[in-house]
Length: 59
Image (tube, rainbow, N blue to C red; front, side, top):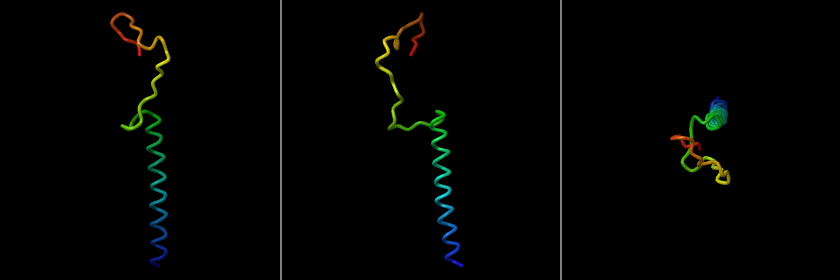
């Protein structure tokens, strides 16, 4: 009885961890969350990156 409950609890923890990781990855890819250690990709080789049009800087 207790062994069966323990097995179900372990499977629940693994399943919920996988589900939470999937939701977090989807939110990260959608841009809804960001992490401090992961800088956004910046293309510094683009010559028109800091071109100004009027008072608006295109970046």
